[in-house]
Length: 360
Length: 244
Image 1 (cartoon, each protein chain N blue to C red):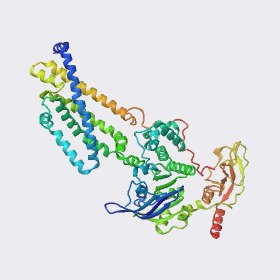
Image 2: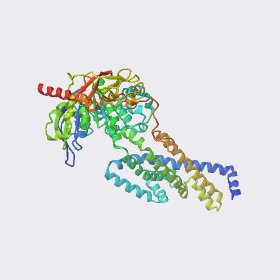
Image 3: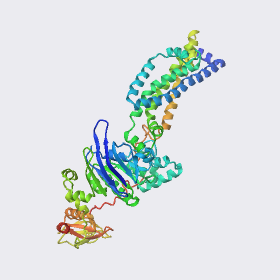
Image 4: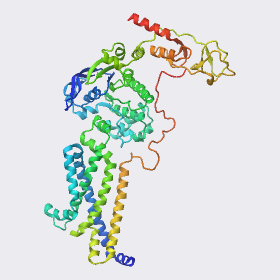
């Protein structure tokens, strides 16, 4: 648990970066600090490991007032992932990851063995350990950065916009990977970002900060979207917050309708309605439009591409998006194994949402 | 001319003299190179770290470098309490020149280090001295090495001036040839001085390469080598989207 108690940071030139910040980052959870530039989020993060000293207030990590600790020693017990990874360019990837174990006095052999484990944990091949950071892509460097932060198994992990310098596709992969790691490791994570989507995706709790380092709202993401505390938060959370909020609404009770199907590689009779084309393991591959005549076995080339897939039991957002992006009006639902489970209708998603509203 | 040279080098005593002078020359130029570098590191660090120190140190090093070498050779004995013919005078003088030359590259090299790398070094728990020795210094090597190469050439040429006060390595061949109006020692002195400078420079380049294995080699291959086949960069993403 990391507790900010009325923490203030005033720089020598008089600017107040953080103003009376009080919040608690729960153990084993991801707490996200989000806000526009100049809101003091990075400064707040750096006060936890004393890279910045507070001008007032107290920061406590599990009963330890950070001011009472020797800074280098404190930092070795706190993982830190920095923007652009900040890897040491002159050391191999493996030695980068082994940095903290070596600093706390493990032998070289043990530190390197641990580093190799970590590379595997973050999904990098062992052979990459011999490379230098300059030979890696941005996304790979960021993974190495995460591995380095985790090497000595610190209970606390600080992440300062770690994924902001990579392209959106890679970023999404890294976010999913972080969530997977977190479900395995259960660290106390404080994550700084300016990207509200990232905050909502990753955070168990999200602190929205405004310019001048004042806390605007501290709440779980669903609450932030449903009940923004004020105009600033509503504005920052964005226009489609209503739609995003669906991510947190359970889709239990949503009806699945049977859909006509045709199978790829087999003859397909002319259809009256849209039919889902499935492969040999009944995974949906696309739609066959009504009235289309197929000569011989059905090929993928004859299909219309489908929309997004809704995994049964997921959120209403996934269900609605599947329905809206499908050419037939029916969103395609699949089970956990990816096999076709049925179709969902946008109207019914909205009706379910209405009934949720009525109930609460 | 060629005959004179063959004559001169044909004499074993001359060959022995040249060999000795070459060793002295190497010692008189390289020992100060190392000492000057060691002195320039903390001073350059201070110039990098403190604005006031920077103006002071860079100004002083400029002034020092403009003092003629012969003047310095003559001034030093009373300051150091050494005899005029002491090798130490030359060593100290050239160490000062080396330091004066290297202070700026040290400061500049440290200034140019990427801030996020240094922040990361602090964040993982390095103490300042260890951070300097194991992160900042190795990363400064490319810029430093360029400075050291200049200083080595400067030293090797300046040692010869020491011949005027009787300590000058191969430079003594110049005074000797000049005084006896006999060319071969002068030619031999020039050739060996150049050869020494060249060899030292090649060794310094090799040392820089050894110390910077992470830098891409110029003109050989691309910076980012392709990944081995079958490496999934993104790993499992588990995204809910997909074509249906």
